[in-house]
Image 1 (cartoon, one colour):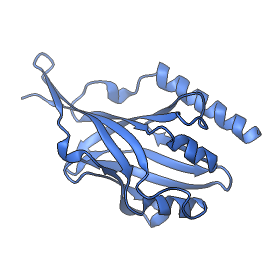
Image 2 (image 1 turned 90 degrees about the vertical axis):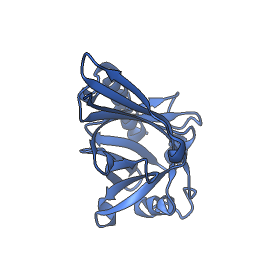
Image 3 (image 1 turned 60 degrees about the vertical axis):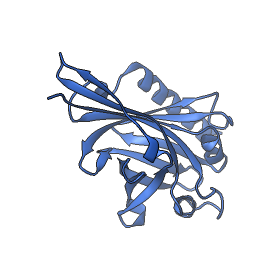
Image 4 (image 1 turned 45 degrees about the vertical axis):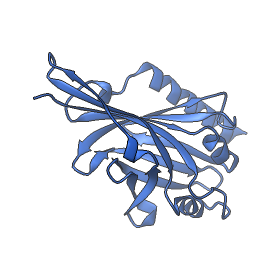
Length: 205
């Protein structure tokens, strides 16, 4: 009960921070961007039932939508500052963590890279020998069309992708369960993880 109370306090604090202190990457500057990622309803409660919480660390914030993590309709929302690079959109210094409160085991998705051309989100996984792994599949990447806004006064272009649908890449669910010490089959392969919106800022020539 004490652990659950502590976790509730942590998430309440995260929610307060995310709603009162805007992330610096929200400032419109060329080379910067922001990803808003929202888990699908049911993911948070499925993980919570297994004693696993999902959060971010580094330059990112998180919040919970819904009554609590165990609610079937609850969702976790991430606000992640990112930097564009040639490979895609890289979340430098922002990691997604799966943490098992029962045994203190955790899985880190370090510096995820969104690649719309390949339709994947890859990340470095320290618990897998720092291998770079495709962790999420973007199911609608081929049909994603950005909304482009040009601000001639600020000499800036904003490119926004909305509603990217994310599922766990093949084999990732089993890897998460194994690293966290969960029973085999705890998470279904290809689990619908959520959606993401990505906004990129660039110079307008």
